[in-house]
Image (tube, rainbow over all chains, first blue to last red):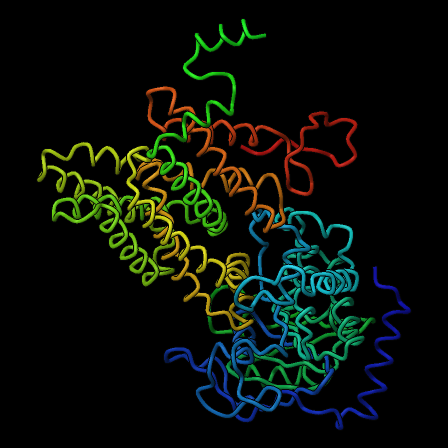
Length: 294
Length: 308
């Protein structure tokens, strides 16, 4: 359960910062008129946005519209067909150690009989060639791994085989592994999918807290923005081949979405500020019943 | 005491004094060669086998050994050494498999069909040389007891090369094996690492074929690693156990085959099989390893029997 005090603390931090210092934070991602095409299909175009250091941004939009594509662009696994994008002042390249990536997953192979702790430890040097030198820095690595495990609250099951753990537990371990690379930017692709509502809130809060403590920018892809509303400063909305950025209550509005989809969309908010979007089923041309962005 | 030991000694082909027995065995050059080659092969198979099991390449390993058989028999036909044919065909197949990459996933039917054909090809090559049935036997089932000093050297050098290669790609290979997507994002060239590993498997298969033959490759390449996986979840420890098990199976197999006139590979595979069945039957803890505690009622970890 989210501790109300924790949420308040995080929100105060976010909103006080963004009012006063928001624009003076360095931009770590700059995109100008970026378009991504796969084959002859344009996934999206007109992507112009900045992401700032330490900022928490949620990438929202119906499934299959190119949210993961954006992440792959930032990871250097894809190239823009148009426009210009820079990450930490350079063109995106594979293996940028400043980026921590937690990909979308169902669950890890249940037969994966590797200790969670060892899996997480790969975040330190698993990408380097050769074998770890026997005695050099082993203790130091062990300390780093333990710190990361503590930070995500996974100490209790760190010595269990990772394949046997639940989805939520695995998600924490993946986060710990990403943190060990000491990133300045965290990319998370649907980390809340296949988690029950309570776990969604817990993981959302965990990511926000850990990122805030380490001043890490977060770009979190989620088809449901509601668990993230308490923490997200801005929203990157991807739909209908377009991509728009702004504060949640600027972007997820009846007017804006109607304009974006060119169809009658209605956005309603409940008393807690959670959003419900109606009208997406008829708005989206492709078949395959996409769920509403709630 | 001496009456008992003399009585026992007269009943069995070996004396019950281990030092005497080992001295007897190592008098013979062929046994020294067999142990040397067998040990080196077991070390390589134990290490490579861990990743074969981890990456679900058991079937691929088997395919490589079958195409190796065709290569070995083809080599015999043209008068080259079987080992060279083995190496050429297995490495060639590894490169083809690596190039086809993901397209091979779930295509075990087509791979199986090609395999059956390579086996038939091997038999055809054999038929071209009627006097070499013995070589066929040794390629299919291993003839470690007939291994020459030259072959021991070749095996030694290929094994050293294989071990160096594994050491070089160990970390990225492990990362790519556990989570290819994240490994890719960290800059690991997973495709290249995968192809290098397939070549390593080809080398390991060629080496192991000399001990247990083409048909029984699993006993050295897969079974020890599969057993070790149930004993630990810490990768370096699993590899160590895998190597130790492979060595034990090989040594015990060789020792028994010295005294009893049955094929070495039979003993090696049987011990491996028995050991594997034993660990599969034992219950598994939450940590993912086996335990000898059978009681499920009063143990705090909530043991559950392993799944068949």
